[in-house]
Amino acid sequence: MKFKNTTDDDELEINLTPLIDIVFLLLIFFMVSTTFTKESRLKIQLPQAEGEKAISQKVPKLIIEISSLGVYAVKGPDDKVARQILNTSTDALQRVIRSAAENQDRDKMIVIIRADKKTPHEAVIRALSVAGRLGLTRITFATESQPGEG
Image (tube, rainbow, N blue to C red; front, side):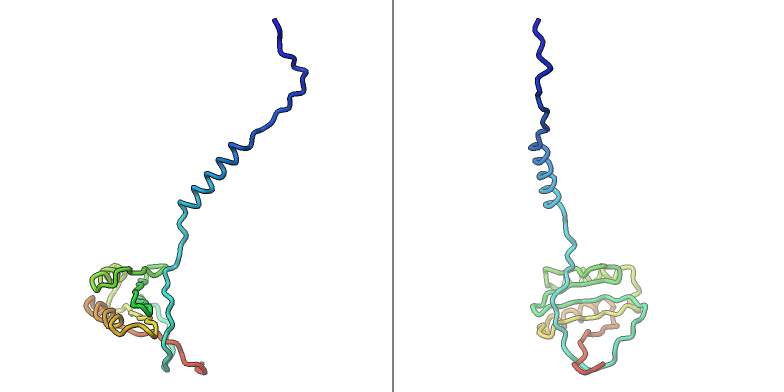
């Protein structure tokens, strides 16, 4: 019976190809399945106006942002980021505002409308109308202070 000669200097090698394949597959999996939190803030240039500075109060605030194209985003008191509304119909805006104002005292809630200076008038009136229908009566508009104001 012949046995294999164990005195040969056979070097053991670790094949890294399967390991690299698995690492790349995991990398691709995590890249595809990861959702990055993107704040859905609309780019808004506020109009300039004179007035008193807002007093910061501990009241719930509902912010309605309207872009220059009439696209809405709503941020409720409990939301971390604004929810952009793809459908600009009155019904869609009403559903989003109603859900954002849920579990809040609507008599104390302040609605802040942040409309771009080039926003169509119709989009602002639609937001005012929906807020009024939902019983939100404390409404204000966000503006920038004019240059030179402190």
